[in-house]
Amino acid sequence: MSGRRAIVGFCMLCALLVSAFAAQSASAVTKGTTAHTCTTETPFTEGKNKFSDAHCTVVAGNGTFGHKEIPANTTTHTTLGNEKTNAGTTGPTPGILKATVATIPIELEAQEVMSTGAWFENRTEPNGEHYSLGEGVIDFKKVKVNNPANCKVEQAGSGAEEIRTTQLIAHTKGQEEPMFLKFEPKAGEATPFAEFEIVNNGGVCAAAQKVKIVGSVKCRPNGATCEFEHEDVTTQGKLRFGSAAGPKAGLKGKITITAGLGKETDPEPGKTNPIAATTVETP
Image (cartoon, rainbow, N blue to C red; front, side):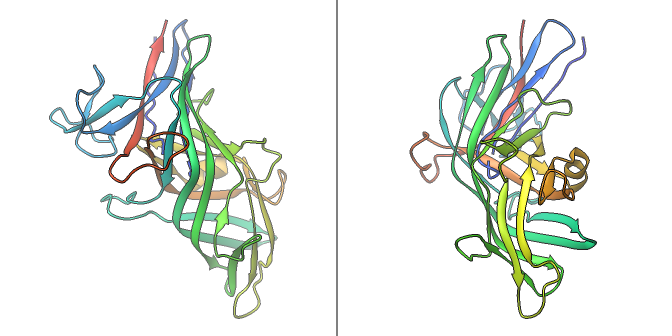
């Protein structure tokens, strides 16, 4: 029997929010994923690895970080963001959206990514499949237009140089290998993922238009970090510019998700830990 291993940083947005995992083996064993906090608080969950880093990505026998299981059916407030996602976990990794529309290359870069009202739960299906499900809104802030020139982004209704998604859900339930964390509009993929405007900025912007991003997007989990790769996203072909038949959009960036204290309260300072997850098997 071949094994599968999925590690997720549940960190929606973003977005947002939240992680969910599921996998099926070729045998009668059901595989899925249960989310844990990555923490120094002992005792760690029995049988899990120790790690040397706060995102539970580097296995070390003498590591001071480990997984502590989050009980099933317990709603947990989460915060999804790109803070401390660079190589040294000292700063953010910008989020970059690319598309070519009517032969015009468009590239947007967000310095800050942060969720609003995000939460998640570990759940179990009647067949024993483990997964996590989350929900929230993701804000891409301090957005600049790298290409074309003389352009800037404005969020519909506010005029701010940022992009706010619709209400999203995030999950990996039923996802193929390698495991991905999937973000999609809660109301369905026919609902816009995000809407905003590209407008003139000190000159004529060749890409000026009202923008609708539709579809869904997946990131690749690694410990408490989930990474969007431009090639992954364009290969998936589900994130589109304008309509489901529009040009493919690519997304590059990294996010983490931290666990808070409950669905209705913001996490208290110092009371959150990054979320990671490991595969479990149910006969």
